[in-house]
Length: 249
Image (cartoon, rainbow, N blue to C red; front, side, top):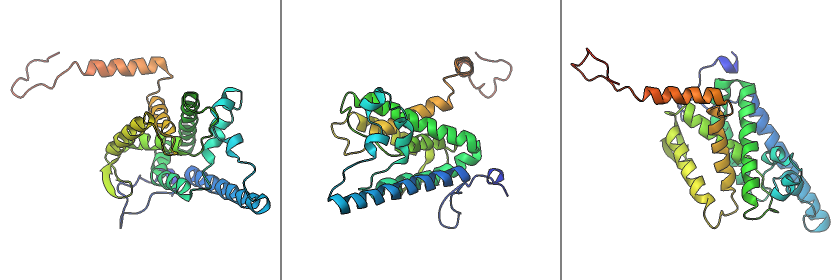
């Protein structure tokens, strides 16, 4: 049976089945893991030959705000496929979340739309990092798929809001609740003095861009019609029992 004809799983856990590994999710897992292994191999070779790392691919392929502003726009795409070789957890956590939520979203949307959304969130997060970097350190490089991953979490929370996920892999919460928690953490952490080496701006940017994309704000006419319909719907109240002969407005 095709991946896209199978009904999305309801609950993940013991005895309930595992998340599906759909084609695009599998491609992204392989791509990010392979690139990390290549990064790690290059790092080992340089340390063996020179005693230290002489060239960091993050400088050319990570998001460096100053360089993006001077035309290195490919960094807005390439940065999301790199991960820190100094921390295996950076790669593992991103790939685990991609595996957990990506399959159902891909089956819900289809491969093309899923990949488009993933890239839009990743590039959008890179734009946020570039803009924010000029107020902090325009020469610093940012790498990782976290911006795109947070966009996936936002979409999962909007589409499968009642699903139960494990927050911090320990606490079961509804997907919608998890999204609000992650958004609040990213928002507060963005304005904190120290980010602890984590780009919370990318997390926040991925969620904001994902929300705007899902609401189709680029299609002004459609967005206006949807907003007007919602405002009109709020004008009507539910008719109380025993008062069935009149409508209230």
